[in-house]
Image 1 (cartoon, one colour):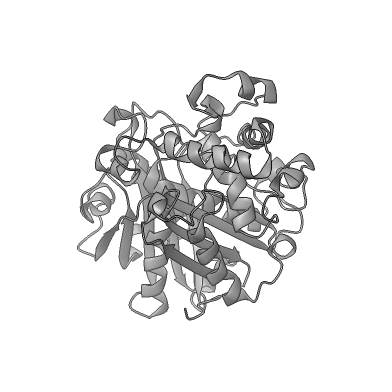
Image 2 (image 1 turned 90 degrees about the vertical axis):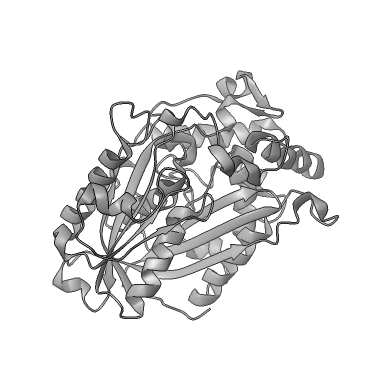
Length: 384
């Protein structure tokens, strides 16, 4: 993949509070996120030349974006790529802007799930998990196998959930803003053994948005902007449990997508070279495996890093500083952009008590599907 490092600038971002928005429509959420991004970028809606909108099931076309924002006859593309939809929408927009087709583009990811009545992935999206299974059930297989192979127990998973709730309690836009204890996690009702209630992210409504341009044009709009350093996307063959070599303790798509990013940036030691990361913690076991697949921990060694507090706000590589999916929930189309919203704020020193020291490079990891059949996006942001 060719390197687009520093060619695309994010000049504005917006994000709604994630939660149970019974009193708001999907259109309301889109308008809120987009107008925060417009204000942050210092642009007006009529300056936008093209749009990309990411949603899994809450919209059917580019009208999902033009209708609520009253955008006038501009090209708008709807993107869907399972749970990696949000970041893939940005990826496609970035390619178009880098090619010179447009100077100013809007990207919005959203989902309105609470009104749907679904308690997990909505509608046909659940079919990616496999007949007779659920998302918690599929990832419970990964937890069981990981425990067996590496001699790990639920306590380490509990510490991940506790960390993310601690961070989310310090974020006014998180769905859950409440600290929890290891004891609460271990005593919570079982959803799919060994995963309990606090090991699983909630069903949520939300939207996030970004305004992008070419880096050479960015100073015309804003002095304090962030650039896309690298992008990676990997889609698995879907063999999953049919592959006798697949053992559920590693996600090859994460390794492949992150390798694309690391190769573009010349990163050899991600644990030392990445300042912070937002990862797809749909379940606590997912985050644990992601540590190893991103090269933050050695295979089977994530336990030691978790016990040492390496991925906490005060650790050497903070992960999910905003609270992650565990605190925000997972409105599918919005999650990937929500991760980038946090990195954007961290790079601009606007994360408050969650602020990472010496912030230089942030990594966002967005995963869709189930163990053995994933789509994975990894995007790195930094300063030009």
